[in-house]
Length: 401
Image (cartoon, rainbow, N blue to C red; front, top):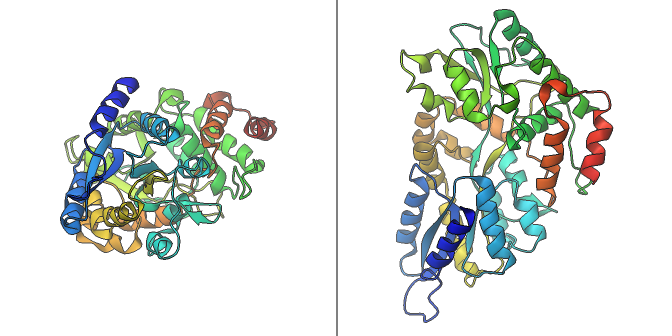
């Protein structure tokens, strides 16, 4: 399937290259996932109007599965394909693409534009070796969702241990993402960061300490308790959503897509849902929620880099972030946009969302991220069999390899 899509992209790309004759607007090709709400297309149309005859952005739609997006981009960039001007980059690709020489850095005034007013979490995802490699566009994070008709509002210092104990006592579950895939890495990374640890230091070296064992303790405690949902070791985001909607759980950690979905359940189910910040790993340390999102990078091989930077700035503007929130359910990366009426209407929990994204824990910024993630998944799966003792050395060895 990926090969067929790649072939289609190569064929489609033949007609959207830059105008080398100078007789019309330059074509700027933006390769990004097919955003189903239409917000990305609206941003493209708006920027094209603003550009007049200087450039025209072509929205080249990639598959919605991140691994397929990355594969298609990597193949083209490795071949130094100049058909790509802009890329919608998953937050975990920055270091890999920068290290490979596929991105142009944002320097001088451009760097100021990329950084201006941005929340701290998204800003970390575009920074590698003290240089900025993309402009933050849309973000995402997980909140703690709970049945407010059955449990009390959790306190600010609510911990995973307290949540597990309460759910088990009530005979209800806690929905998490614990299959052997990227979602498990997201969970474990946030648990480790919430204990004050990190997996990769600023020098790009493995830095595994007892915070990894603490993460394993929580994972195993849930997996072996009465609060473990059915099929926990194979559950992903959508299985967690369904389990919560089917009344088997009082708590769920998940992305914001579950809220509009709850409106379709019926019987005022959405009104029964409360939200709070991600649970703490340890009582005295604020949680570090997960962090996702899409940044916009300029290809090293673009034939029109100056126009590409200009187009990227337009696409990632505050107005277009607000539209992405309204139509696509994608949280903004610029702090002031959270006051926009489009955002507050789309997200009744906008303030909690902003605080979570600002204090979120990026996954390790390293060119070796894909292999790091696989090492984490292998070490922490299956959840019920994880042994905290000895885990630190095991994980460190795998990450160093």
